Amino acid sequence: MTASPRPPVPLLFLVGDNGGGHRSAANAVAQALGRLWPGRFAPVIYDPLLGPDAPRRLRWFVGIYGPMIRWCPWVWGVLWRAYGSPATLGWLWRTFMAPAYTTVARAVAASQPAVIVAFHPMTTEPAVRARDDAGGRPPVITVITDLITAHLAWRNPAVDHVIAPSAAMADSLPRQGLPEERVSQIGLPVAAEFCRAALRTPQRRALRRSLGQRGRFLVVVTGGAEGSGGMYRRTAAILKRVEGVDVAVICGRNRLLARRLARLAARTPGTRLTVHGYVDNMADWLRSADIVVGKAGPGTIAEALCCGTPLILTSRVPGQEEGNAEFVVAAAAGSHAPRPRQLAAEVARLRRDPAALARMRAAAARAGRPRAAADIAHLIAEVASDTIPVGCAFRPDAELAQLNAGR
Image (cartoon, rainbow, N blue to C red; front, top):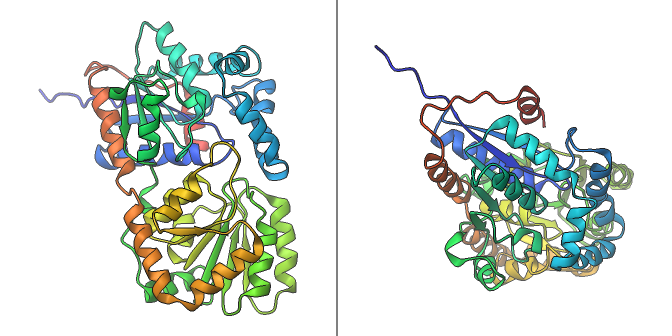
């Protein structure tokens, strides 16, 4: 008699779609699980903060992050620090964030996961409570998606394991209250398409042409999913002060920025400037670029390093992005140019000095962590194998399955 195949092991990945990095990291790990063990795991990627299950008050509170970092990032910095003490963070959990306990508990009850993985700082505490309410199972793993600086919400000592994206982060967590044996330094997970072999110059030019570019020296300007970081002024400075380069701007969800840049493109001679919204082939843009310009977002940094593409970092979100530019500069994988004139001068310098650009490209490739998603997948698989019975059936809730497939 032929044994029936084992049902897939359920996993619950908790994200927040205020910014794109949390879901991108979760997708990368889910992709790695599927590649390493086809059909063995069934991760549900779920947003308990902004998804349709979340009440309007919670969606409003979490949703102000995007407009805030575009228009008044200093206010976000004040709030980030204000909620960095146990007392104020506890108050936040009792007030605005309290509904997240319910949405996470419902997701856990519906999916019956073998492991809960938190990819967003404000999902760790609800995940721990859901675990404790269920008698200590399933275990909770935190994947920190900030590169150097971790908010208090990330540093929950009650989680079962914490995955740190950098040595600096891993070294700091035990000093901040997390047991050292629960911390693993692995890296920030990025999707497999960012981790292919580096392209040579003729290959990059060919890829540029396939993207509608002319094949010349290409600067890709990005500001993360929210299109933040003063991208208009910086793009205009490059076009005005640097000859012989093309600029492609990835605006993300920032439609106002895209409209303003489209008007700038119409006034720019030739086709030096192209403007794009949210793209699903970001790996092609990063791999084809000579330089990537943008704010010091951890996801963009991790992806560009895995592509072996040099970075010029122009700004940072106060709080969680502090230290990121210094990390890139210390690795010799890029430079920091906070003012538009400095940015244009740095682009021009690298345009004139192919040897310096090649050294920076090699350093970027050395600093990348292309195995991070696979290594995190291995850790999750090991934890899951210790927690779920072999014959356990998995019937995910239809609504959760629809969310997982549709977002």
